[in-house]
Length: 442
Image: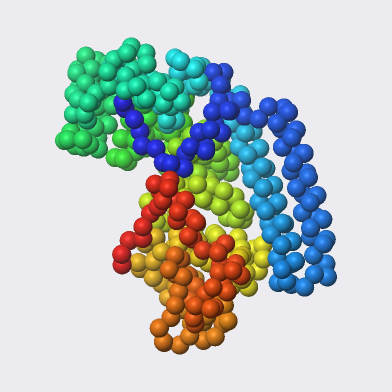
C-alpha cells in the first residue's frame, strides 16, 4: 500500500508498455513488427508525395484544397510518430545491450513475472512487504482488499499504514525505512517533516540494498546542492533499474551539474531522457516534458509528447501554455496563417482553452499572440465577419472563442465547421476521465 500517484494519461502507455516488457527485459518491436512499421513509413511517405502532386491546380483554401492538406498533415504526423517510436526502441535496446547488469538487478512480479521497474506503477503490500505489478493487483488484492500473496487484510486507514511502516522500519526492514523516510521528508499524512530523519532512514535502507532509497538519497543530496553525492546515489540506483534516477542523471548532465557539458554528453543526455521516457511510459510527466524540448523543429513530435500530459490533468501551467502555442504553430505550418479563421480547421478554440488555464492568461502580456487573438475574435462576427463594435455580443458558451452578430450566424458557423473546432467534446471527454482542469481566476 505504498502507492505512488498516477496520472490518468498513463493507462494507454501502460497497455502499450506491458506488451513490450517481459521477464527478460525490453522486447520492443519484434522483427515482423519492425518490417511492418518500416513498410508503413515508406507507404506514408509515398502517399504524401502523391497528395502533394494532386495539389497542383487546386484553388487555395477551397474545400478540396483543405481536404488534401489535411490528408498530408495526418499522414506526415503518423509517419513522424512511427519514426520516433523506432528511435526510442533502438535507444532502449542499445542501453540494455551496454548495461545487461541493469536487467539482472530488476525484481519481478511474483505472479506474472513481469519486470518491476523503479518509477513504474507497482503495489507493495505492507503485510508481507511483497511487490506486485498493477495488473495483478487489480485482479487480486485491490479487488478483494486482501494481499494475494499472504492473504493479509489491507490497512483500514492512513494512520495504520504509517504505524506499520514505523514498526517494520524499527525492525530494520529496508523497504519500510525508505517508505517511512518519504513521510518524514515531505511531512505527509500527519508525520512531522524531518529531513535529517528522512536522510538517516534512506541511508539505512540503502545499506540494505533498497534501490528506492538510493534514488531518494540522490534526491536529498541534490536538494542541498551536494551534486557529487547526488550523482553517486543516482548512478547507484540507475544501475539497479532505477529509471527515475536515470532520468535525474540525464537532467544533471543536461544542465552541466556534476557533469561537463560537451558534445558527447549532449548526445548521452538525449539517450538517457529517451530511455527514461520510454520505460516510464507516461506514469511520470517530467521525462516526456523534457524530451519534447528536443523537438523544437518538429512540431508534431512536440504535440506527441505534450498532448497526453495536458489532457491527463497536469497542473503545470507552463506546459499548458506551451501546448497551446504548439497547437497554433502546427496548424499554421501545415495550412498557413489563414487557417486560424477557417471553421472546421481552426486550432484557436482548443489553443485558447489551454492558454486560459495557464499563468500567462492571468498575467497577460500585450505582445502575447493569445492576447492579440482574444482581442481579434471579439471584434468581428466569426461567420459573416461584420464588425461588432461595442454592442452586446453573442458567443459560443462552450469555448468563448467565437463571437456572433446573431443566432443565425452562430447556427451557420456551427454547421460550417465550428462544431469540429469547439472544445465541447474535449471538455466532456476530460470530465469523464476526471482530468478537466478549470482555469484559475485572475
